[in-house]
Structures are given as structure tokens and as C-alpha cells.
Image (cartoon, rainbow, N blue to C red; front, top):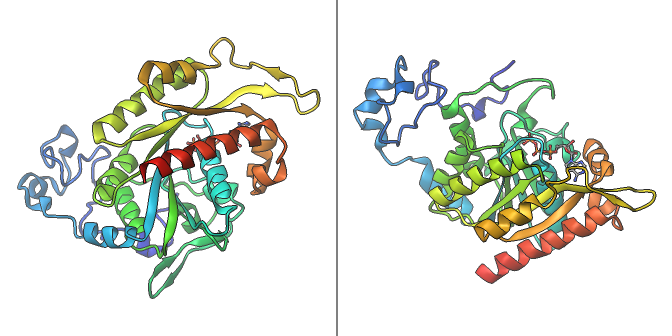
Length: 327
Ligand SMILES: Nc1ncnc2c1ncn2[C@@H]1O[C@H](COP(=O)(O)OP(=O)(O)OP(=O)(O)O)[C@@H](O)[C@H]1O
């Protein structure tokens, strides 16, 4: 269990008391210092006085850094393990297949960063330069930043409270030398938590193109996606569309398709009809996807003729169309 070995990632300790509450409402909130969660926090009085509601000095720096990023896309899911990081990686690889497209991936799944492993760069480290932290490059036009690069081993757990996560996300946005990007894909933790609120707060002025919501077909996952939709609507983030992952199983030998989650397969289609949110597509279960992720190689390149690759690429084309239509 560690804090982090990379000291610049740790926000100013003076501003974050050791006993900051787990559900800190945030210094900008009307509830700052007044919420039940604030009881016992060293910052309670200063927060309640309103003194912390000064403009966040990070915001203009984030805005300046993000001015070089044309499109910012959030990848969200209601539940964990539904394939959000895997989808983010395939989206990144598909964009970066065009060498003229500069792609960045920011992994803000702080407690479960899997992007470095999926992209085959888990042993890399972040370096500081005069223009900020250099992201790790999967290839010339694909840059990645993740807290996973800052952990000594993949077994180390990060146990941070909200304000610290907030500080790291702010640093990922303002201190990383992203350069000029066409797309910044932001892989988030499941649910709606501190990380999501931080991203929304920090990118409010720079703009977010929208969110892609990943779900599996089961009702339990679909229910959680409804909460995610509610979150996006409350904070004013456009939903680009839904992706149903692990939708049916295509046997690699006989090519026959089985519905593993019968009778709920197609739950995302129903959700799309109920909410008017576009269904971008459905990706079948394919055990080779997990294998490619474990080896850190692109599934799209390894199995170009598979039904799952066709599904991913169709979805990615739809994402590009929607973004282009809005540009
Ligand atoms: N279509 C698929 N077919 C088979 N396996 C898949 C598919 N999509 C993802 N997986 C596998 O499912 C597991 C979970 O995927 P992933 O880590 O991308 O989920 P996640 O939603 O990002 O999870 P978390 O948010 O909890 O980190 C991984 O082992 C991944 O390889």
C-alpha cells in the first residue's frame, strides 16, 4: 500500500489534511465545511468560511494546455468489468491507425489503472521535462498517461481520498505535455465518483465532446447505465451513444453465435429506444480480446477478420461521424 513514489503527483499536502473525509463535498461546493462528511476534518472551518471558493488557479493552466486538444471523449460505465478500458484501448488504436491523427489516452481510473497493461506499456515510466510530464508513447501518434506508470509494481494499491484524486487529475490535465491532439480519450472508473466530478469541473471551460457509455447486456448493468445517463444529463455532458459489450458469443471454430446472457441480450437496444440515446453497436464476447489485452497487443490488428473487430470498427466509424457532424 503506497501513496505514490512520484512526488510531483501528490497535491500540496498543506491544502489537503490527512483526515480529509472520504466523501469530501469539494472546496467549491456550497456544502464545503458544512456537510456531515466534513465533521472532524481539519479544513472544516476554512471551507465553511467560504475562503476556499476562490477560483481554482489550475483552471487557466488546464484551459491553456487543453487548447491544443481538438476533441475530448469520456468513456463511462455504470459497472466495473464491462470492458470500458478495453474499448478505450481499441478506440485509441483505431484512431492512431491513421498516422495523421494524434491520439491521447488519459487513464483516470486511479484505483484500478489497467490501460498501461492493455496497451503493452506497463513497465514504462513517466519522465519530467521542461514542458511538463512527458506521456508514454505506444507509437509516435499515441500518447498515454496513467497513475499506473507511477506505481512500483502492479500489485501496489492506491488508497486516496477524493481531494488527492482531484489533485492528480488536475495535474494530468495541466502538467502533461500532451502537445497537439486530435482526440483525448479519458478512461474513467466505473460509476459516478470523485474522478468524474473532477473531470467535469476541470474541463467545463475547455469543453467535452461527449461520453460513450459501455454496458453489458444484463439488466443489472443496464440499470447502472441509467444512473450514468442521469449523471451526464445533470452535469450537462452530451452522450455520444451506448455500446453493448459481451453481447453474444461467436465460436471461433464454427462461427456460430450463442446468446450467453439470454434473455437480456439486446438490453442496450431497449435502453436506446427508451432514452433516445444512439446505440453505437454491440461487440460480441471473444476470449481472444482478453488474451490480446493481457499481451498488450491490439486486438484489431491481431484478428482483423473477427466479428468483434468488425463490430469495434463500425462503432468507431459511428463515433467519428457523430464527432464530425458536431464539429
Ligand atoms: N468483448 C469482450 N469479449 C471478451 N472479453 C472481454 C470483452 N471486453 C472486455 N473483455 C475482458 O473483460 C475484462 C474486463 O474488461 P475491462 O478491464 O476493459 O473492463 P472495465 O469496464 O474497464 O473494468 P474496470 O472499470 O473495473 O476497470 C478484461 O479481462 C477484458 O479483457
